[in-house]
Image (cartoon, rainbow, N blue to C red; front, side):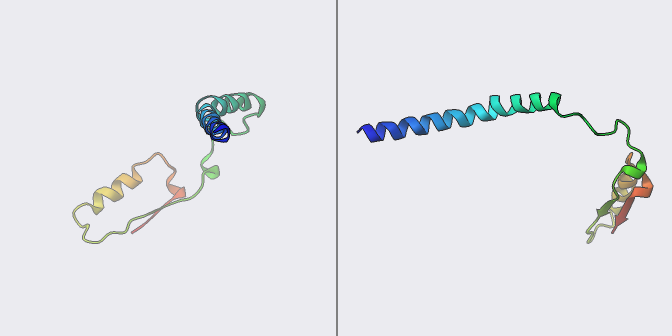
Length: 87
């Protein structure tokens, strides 16, 4: 009986620690690391620093909407020289 009670206590404590880790320990750790580790990202990235993006459309019987899809792809704020669309 004593062993079963010990096992139940261990299951309860590990479950409690799992919940506390999710909602308390991990966010607190991320908050503290935000102060300790400097932000090395640039505030404004030039278009040369942005990665090349490929948009791939697998189109079959899409004649009615393919023009609208292509226009919306080029209507982004991403630099056009870094964007490639494949149909």
